[in-house]
Amino acid sequence: MEVLVLGPLREIAHRPDGPGLRGAVIIDGLDECEAEQYHDTTTTGPKTQLLPPRTSDQDQLEILHVLQMASADPSFPFRVLIASRPERVFREFFNPENSPILFSHKLDLHEDYNADADITLFLEAQFSRIRRRYNLPPSWPPPGTIQTLVENASGQFVYAATVIRFLATSHRESPKALLEAILKMGAIQKTTANPLEQLDALYTHILLSSPDPPLSVLWVRSIERLNLVTHSLCASNINLLLQMDPDSNEAEHLLGNLHSLIRVPPPSDQATTKYDFYHRSLFDFLQDPCRCKKLYGENSKISIFIWDGFVRTCIASWIGPGVSWQDRSDSQQRRFFALVGKAIKDAA
Image 1 (cartoon, rainbow, N blue to C red):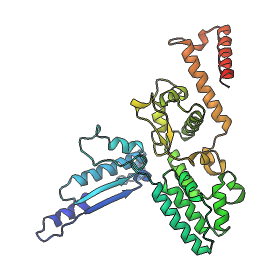
Image 2: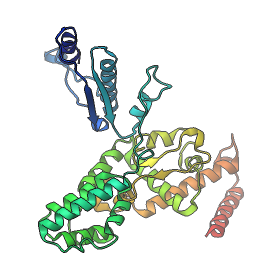
Image 3: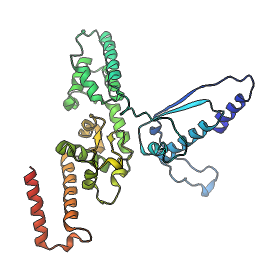
Image 4: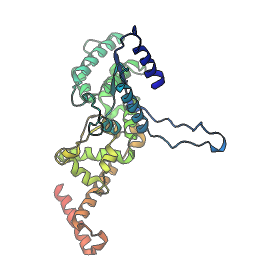
């Protein structure tokens, strides 16, 4: 940055006839920057070693610091705009409590911008283009189709763009048949290839960024199921239920990099606010082994995970602090399970 950018800019700025440069540097997808491992080339022979592995977070944070340094230089005439999913490294870097430098206002596209109108306009224009290309009737797509796709997109242009790309580029079936397959995602694998390959790749990329992807998926699917059953279970109660250690911060550890998929309430609101999801199609993805592949978990596995959490929480509440389960007599243990069974029967 110093040699290739700031140095030349300073030379230009000091010229009396230098051009008055203005503009913006826009960086999109910085959260997808992945760490590149490299060897220490300063030594040769048997002393050559592989440097300690870097993480993607370290590379992303280094880029942010370099851009921050550049923007603070008087000779740097550009504003810097960064577009990214709200992963942990970005939330912490731009948190005003962690930095003495004031940043411009953050724009949360999930909260501050409703993309439905733009996605509708995009789909209408693209369907018109496909109609002309394939000489389809003006009545296609059927009424309500665009609204359904907009709802499925959940504000994500990537969904709409992937649908259109699949309809426009596939040579195996007509756009009409392909659209019907997309609208019947439950049976899509029986008729044609996965039309949401790029969306699936995005979901996979995000979920694999978690420190423990399989356990994170268990949490995500358990939260979704609990939300369907209870409708009002707050985030702190879900954490209490699912965490192996009630005193740990397992929820943040597992969900910290998944904020683009799940709306995680701030700690101060978790006792009154529930978890929510941005992407409705996320669970179509996670419940289809052909799409999510190694991230797939059987429904029975989710049930067992929730049940284990329930029993663990009941035991912790029943035996009290400083007492182990083994300290209870056989009759007390049998009584406990009888009470749990009765609670389940009553709930059903």
